[in-house]
Image (cartoon, rainbow, N blue to C red; front, top):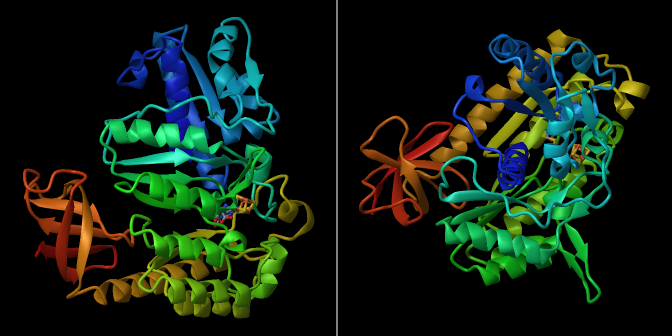
Length: 428
Ligand code: SAH
Ligand code: SF4
C-alpha cells in the first residue's frame, strides 16, 4: 500500500513540474513515506530522519517532509519543532503536497486532515521504478474495523472505495505499458463496496467484471479480511482462470479468546471453516497469513491454539510479528501489555520455525508437478536462470533465457527440487 502511495505522490508532483533525482544529496525536497503499524517501523523512520540531517549543512534550502501514516501520529510535532523536518502530510492530503512544500519555505507546515471521501480516483499513478510485468492498483483506502491493537483506523481514516471506472482506466494504462499481472490493493481489499445510482458493486462483482474485461491479465488481491471472505468470492475465483488461486488471509491468532480481545469479529472455528471453504471450492489454492504473538493476555494454551490452527490451515507462507503496543489504540487504553518481551520473542521464534517446516512440506508436495509460471525476469542469483511465479504465488526458478521466455510470457515448468521459500524446475 505504501509503495503504491509513493507512486501516487510521485505522479502528483511530476504533474506539478517537480523532477526526480537519483540520490538524496541531489534533492531539494526529500519525502519519507512512513508506516506506523509497529514501533520498530517508526523507529527506523526517526533514524532515517537523523541520518539525513547532515545534508542540511550542504544545502540550507533542503526540505525534509514526512508523509503517510506517521504524520497522523506525531502529535507533539517534536521533530518539526526541533527543525529536523519541515512538514507533515497525511495520507489523504497528497493532492496538496506541492502547496505544503512551497508554504514550508517560511514556516513549518502540517496537513494531516483525514477525509471521508478521498480515493484519488482522478489520478492514474505512474510507475516509480522501471515498469515490470506486475503492477499494484489501490481500489479502496482506510479501515474502520478498529482491531484493538491496530493504528490503521486512526492513521488512514474511514473505509472508502474507488469507482470501478477509474480502476479500469488505471489497469488499462498499466496494460498499455506491458503489465501482465495486477494486484488489487486495499487495507481490507475484499471489503470493497461502491454504490452508484444503479447498484452496489461488491468485491466479488468487481473482480468478476475485471477478470472478464481483461482476460489476458492475471489478477491477485491483498489483503483480505476473513469476515468478508464469502463463498461468492471463492466461486468467482474458481470461475476465472486468470484470477490467481492464492489468498492472503490474516488469522492473527488461533485462539477465540484472543481473537475476541483483539476485536477481530470472528472466532477460531469461523476462521478455520473459511479455510475449509477455500480448499473445498478452490482445491490447490495456497493460503498465507499474518500472526501476532504475545497479544495482551495471551496464555501458553492460546499460543498452542495458534500453532494447531497454523497446521490445520496449512499456510504456505506467513508474516509473523511480536505484539507492539500502539498509543491511542483500544488495547493500549484498556488492556495490559502483560506478555513479557522474552515470552513474545520465544513464541515468535517457535511459530517462525513451525512455519518454515510447513512451507518446506508445502513446497515438497509440488515436486513432480507442472505449473504455469508467469516469467518476471532473470533470477537474481544466476544469469542463466529465470524467475517467475505460479498462480499460487510461489517463486519458481528454472533454466532458460529471456529470448524464449520474455517477461510477461508463461512457461510450463516441472518442479524438481525446493527449499522452504522457492521451487526449482525445468521447462517441459
Ligand atoms: N487489514 C489487514 C491487515 C493490515 S495490517 C487485516 O486486518 O487482516 C498488517 C498486519 O500487521 C496485521 O495483519 C497484523 O498482523 C500486523 N499488526 C498490526 N498492528 C500490529 C501491532 N500493533 N503489533 C504487531 N503487529 C501488528
Ligand atoms: Fe488494522 Fe484490523 Fe483494520 Fe486490519 S482490519 S487494518 S488489522 S484495524
